[in-house]
Image 1: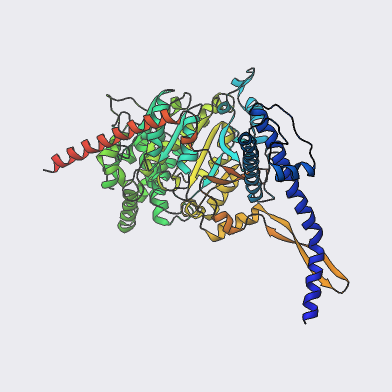
Image 2: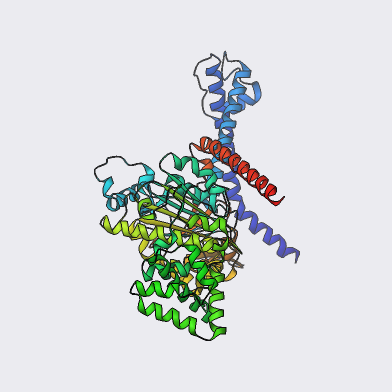
Length: 591
């Protein structure tokens, strides 16, 4: 047994001996070269001139035996030693930088898209696409980056800037505090060239962007529940969207969706409530009635006013259907009307309904005018019970449909494009047919960005089929940090693909050592690595391009962030002041 161990030791020693000789020679060369170059530079700097000694082993021996005086005559020893130290310090710094770059490059998973694969999203590729999509850019020699497309981020680790085109529609899935607001929503609003629509249940995006957007156009703030405690300085004629059966049905659908967790699962009461609300909305719009009249009709099913108004508008079939509902079994009628009342219960709040009632002292928000300019519309609402989600969804949908109409009148596409950031879309902006709208909004120059916390959150609102349709229709998808749905992450890992991984096997025998190479397929990004994506990074899935890992560009790291931060601080102070005043007023009224 001892003989065998000794034989193995000699075998290993014989294998390592050539490499040891090479390593000693390389280290000796580096040390000697550094001393030779550093001493010569130090002597030259201290006034002895450039007079390098011979680059030989005897020179190094002379230095070790007698010091630098014989090699660099007339040079101060301190200067020589300082030069040597400086050269080795510079070399160490270079080595550290190179090592960091190599480690960073090696940490990037192999098999993902590189800059060449993403050429269509790089500055040169996206600029050419922008000229094709925007007639107003033709003839301009130099384009501003934000005129060419929507900023996505930078390719990891040190790749170029990447942008999506103005006909892309985007779906972003990220956990809370993973960078949705700072890296996506705020930059999109700040960089938008045309009109802007933003939905949210928080005031953070509003606070940061309001002052900047006020510099380029009018700011409309629809804040019926006091998210930013903005004073009511506008009103929207909600019933103006209900002059047609389609418009009335769409608005009814938004209110129904606000209380229905899955658009694909409508029971009898939900479907009947949507039909009833459609008839009542249409009757109110055609008959010049108000929202208060509509609420009165819901409170008293026996009121024949909506039936008479529908007949006066030649909507006989709809009038007969509503009359049939009213004349039906009392239990059925009351169930339908009670469900309808629950759908529009937010309108019972006078602070909410005031925003959708005519007010001669305030300007009216008109969606068809908004989409043609550079104005900004902030739609803020709480989620949960009592929220104004139905109203928010109705106004957001009306604005996007106005954009489609304007695009058709302009030849097919808005120029400049409209930006719609649907933050918290599953909570405050449940547009039931959003997956269907995605398929053509991009081609109209309406850039929609839907922000969700997870795939499952979207499935609860639009159903599995609807969420699958939304996923398929989105031409740009960003998957950020904190995705904890195991099944979804596993599917993403399969979409990213697999790569060949080589394995070296070493076998030893009497004849010597032999090595064999074998390959196996491993995921490019295993599920656990997708789940553990660092904050500020995202996996980019673009149509027709291999997946890529990108680094988001938070607004506070961009040029001009200091001025934006200062304006945001002032806006935050104003919100705090308005909240305090509102609380004081409420306390006085309670007394």
